[in-house]
Image (cartoon, rainbow, N blue to C red; front, side):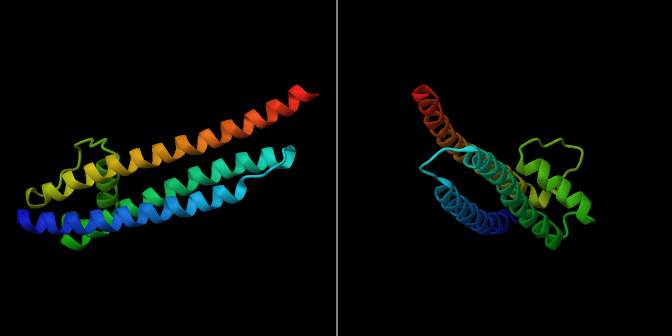
Length: 150
């Protein structure tokens, strides 16, 4: 059973990492297009909306990854219903792990793998968000330079 756990976990690792990578590349492309050479009210609002879009997109990417595990748990018959499976997957992926819902002993390694994957992907998203915030800080510096010229 351990080998099957590792095979399923390995497949999910590859798929979720690919989804995450593709999502971050797409978000990077969107943000790159938002870079503007001049500063005015519409560009300030646009930068704010772009950050909001990034946050919602990161949430959507993580939701897709959580649902991949949820559907896997359901396919394996580890939980009786969708609500229990998605709750378990969300708390495991986010490494909260309340412990009020437990997975069958046969699939514990898969759940442990989801926790590690979630930890890595949430960290990757955080690093991405920090890099986006640095772009916003550069944008603010351009605004401050304009204020200093006045």
